[in-house]
Amino acid sequence: MKSLIDILDLTTQELDELIATAQDIIANPAKYATSCHGKKLATLFFEPSTRTRMSFEAAMYELGGNVISVTGAGTSSAAKGESVADTAKTVSCYTDIIAIRHPKEGAAYVTAKNATVPVINAGDGGHCHPTQTLADLLTIYREKGRLNNMTIGVCGDLKFGRTVHSLINAMSRYDNIKFILISPEELQVPTYVTKDVLEQKGIPYVQTTDLEAVMPELDILYMTRVQRERFFNEEDYLRLKDSYILNMDKLKNAKPDLSILHPLPRVNEISVAVDDDPRACYFKQVLNGKYMRMALILKLLKEAGQL
Image (cartoon, rainbow, N blue to C red; front, top):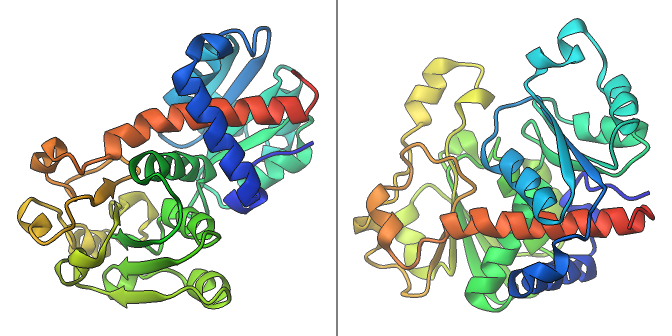
């Protein structure tokens, strides 16, 4: 039985197939309206979420299925000390597929090892967030018509940003990709990403602290927030939180067909004035995330023999 814990669990062929399914869902929603009739998705969210949880639930409802939900450790038996493994075994008795978000790295893996139904990682600590990456890939594909031959700038918290790690892993498998990694020195991409992914695959990358200097080169700008919840020290967070604020002035030298992405929520790293610029794609990402989660639910339930 297949689950999705890391974006690398999917081959490039599977990624392309999911994008094709999502495109078909967009074009023919009625065709999929009863695909998951009688099936239940459990959303186990032990960390706050708006977009991810609601998009999973909207995805399942739009496929004709149902949802049972846990939001917050305080409302589940985790508050009594129940292990992730036991929770997985229990929830498997009630549902056909599980989406889990958890503050601890590796929690989704443990869930998948112990569940008897497919499991989707909806974010595990600072590790990875594969379904956000699916939303990112569909957005890039719909905006650019391709997933190759481009320069991608990722900006902000690249150390703890699980969405960044997943995006680099995914896009590094396509041809002629270059990364520009823009962050304060304290928040640079971990070496296990630069050395084990980029350098090992011979993918060109540049590390810089200067967003404006590299702006003219970018086809994609992926902004991220500095995440208060990942810091052990409030002083460090306050010092770094406003390192990069994207505004119209900083876009003066950007390409006219630049695509600006952000996994959201934003705090103040993108000025609201940018929202009206045709290059702003972050709310399109939100919608694309629902379509890709629909495609993924269909794929995993089919592979599990449930559809």
